[in-house]
Image 1 (cartoon, protein in one colour):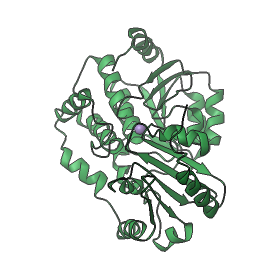
Image 2: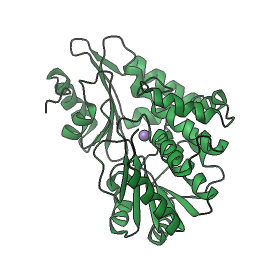
Image 3: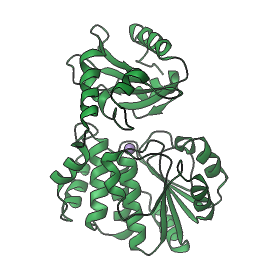
Image 4: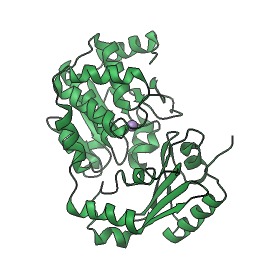
Length: 340
Ligand SMILES: [Mn+2]
């Protein structure tokens, strides 16, 4: 990961010159969003800053433990407090998102009007312009980028266990336990340094991944056994699931996390999607296991979304059946192979 010396020295200046630091991350935060935010929180706390995290909405149960002993505001629960904090901040760190719109309409408006210094730390493609952009789309996760930034800021490779735990958690969740975005040898050096702080990788893995409720496991079984559609010729598959089906399993936020990846386990499937009906919209997740199928481009072009080459999200305000019909046609037309 190549860093510009001037970016690091400017970041050091910003940190020295400012006392109040706020970290913000994306809507529907995942392990990498919460991992990177909490690691940064702990680092800034260590160097005596007044620091706080603003999380746009709910935090999935499996990664809640990362927030222990941090100060955070959930904007959806206490918008006034989040707004005040953002308006009073001297230095804003934007973690694991590339555009202010990724944290929802209400927060986006506030972020757009802030005059404080803004530093982006992220691994999504096409970042929005901030004062400093630590943007590395080739990185496995924002947490990997955060380790590299903290190393260059502090000269240290091994951090306290609570910082290492947060970074390790984000790397594991964003790489599917090192099963994708995992080819770079540099990533394993980062992980090695995290483990040197004495954290127990097996225990963290259990905390993050082995936390299903019985309903969640049953929903996964139902989705795979009853809702999976496979298109052999097109090497594609998808699962579409309605709100009433989700309600049968007493759906809780986060319960569909990772379901999309099961479709890629099929031999002969290179492209897949999870389509799920939510309150007022249809949420879509796309995955690919072949670089020539760029789901970021596909999501941007057709489904109001984006993300990474091999993992992206989108949304639609059509009905579930209309989305399924349209998406099925796209599979038959192989629209998911987006030509430049
Ligand atoms: Mn991420």
